[in-house]
Length: 173
Picture (cartoon, rainbow, N blue to C red):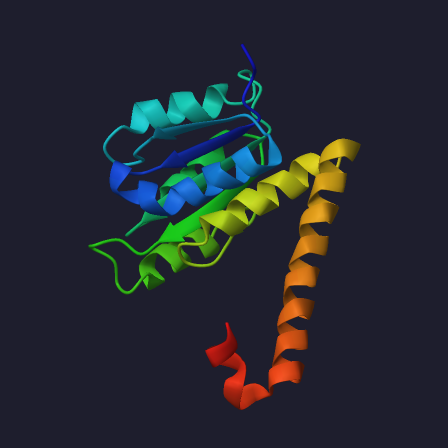
């Protein structure tokens, strides 16, 4: 059995459409991960056990997504010594996502949570990969290759824009 290096947790399965982007990044980079639901409010003991045992299970980074009050990332960070990346999620009971963003951003000193943009689980996955790449040359090269591809994509668009002129740019795509 291969040990997952990244834990991806969410407060509810309704968060899965957002959080699956982090799982897809892990797949794209060939990193083992685990994905589950851990509610800070409805299953606090499960949350505590998950966070407390994460390092012993081999996890190196945790990505935690939550909407509304969004306590999950901060609570997990308060329990584990692993880096935690918070993904604020615009949920059905959200105040346009601001409640989630601020709940994850405004952690007290001593309990940091890296926070990405609203619904930006893709960026959370990329940040987790970059954290792992610090001590893994092969993974570091994959990150560099990814960045190189991003640059090529933008430069191709620049070429099209310059070649076609901006008024025709969207007609040529």
